[in-house]
Amino acid sequence: MKLHGLTGGMGMGKSTVAGFFSARGVPVIDTDEIARRLVAPGQPALAEIRQVFGAGVLAEDGGLKRDELARQVFADAAARKKLEAILHPRIREDWLAQAGRLAAEGRALALVMIPLLFETQAEAHFDKVICVACSPAAQNARLAARGWSPEQTRQRLAAQWPAAQKMARADLVLWAEGALRASEQQVERALMRW
Image: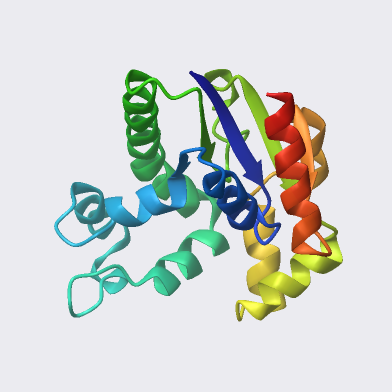
């Protein structure tokens, strides 16, 4: 089975592009989804996060206060490294296991959507790396539409490689700006080549 990594900066259109691949029968493993599952109430990762970051990151129902944890880790690189040490190995173990199951099913191609692909040195696991990109103006507008302040956007973007660096390292760049159909056509052309 060919396993491709799908990456790109926040707000650049990874989920939209992944949806286009999925609609054409390509299984997509979403590492953000894995991360959400790993921090659900009762999970060992959540208990470890509470131990490291304190009870203030938990809501009354025992769930994670994502905004509070984000506030801490994006303002402090050392705190972010602690969170990454808790989550990244577990996330990688999970997506590798899912990819193994898809290969055992005889799938020809699967994608792993992994925002921090290069930052976590995961590229060796992939046959190809696809980077989804857009202009900084479009990215900032999309992140503002999520309700992020300019400071939140700056902090989060500082935690990732610049888009140009990801684009330079990728095997294929898909430009996700303008009409959705344009992005969809890029996905179709990529699948025809593969």
